[in-house]
Image (cartoon, rainbow, N blue to C red; front, top):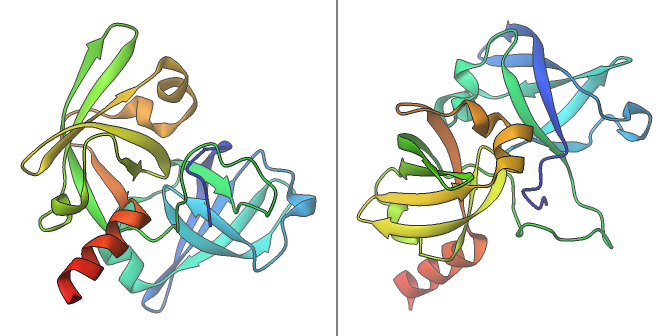
Length: 196
């Protein structure tokens, strides 16, 4: 489990295909002495398992399924990546409860200055848009955000300067593709309604 509070922006340092899967090595500023092999790390919202590590990097392997359902298939050497280590019992829950399971890929419709913040509008894939509600939570590229408004399949979020500057969201522009995870509560409530 994660909180959607990014603690490092890593950078892909190597990419290698392994049969149908792909291996990424990610350079990071994490203290790797406390990151065990087998640990879960959120990469742009995708929960991946550490399979190897060096002095300032770790490796993960990604299945063909994940590559086809997320933006990870577009990663190359040098790609910046929002990273978050798994939450531990007793940690502060600063964002919202995030599973690290990407529900779909959205497309940025617009990015506009709004006061000191940026207003970002994103088109969610259908039928995922049904689970997004104003003032609800959503994860974009692993970042916990509050939904401001929803209009059909487009929703808006505000990014404060801090978030814009310390995550990969600062590079967003119209046409950017982003990993989305809807609020876990919304997912289960919708499933309950479908089966009740």
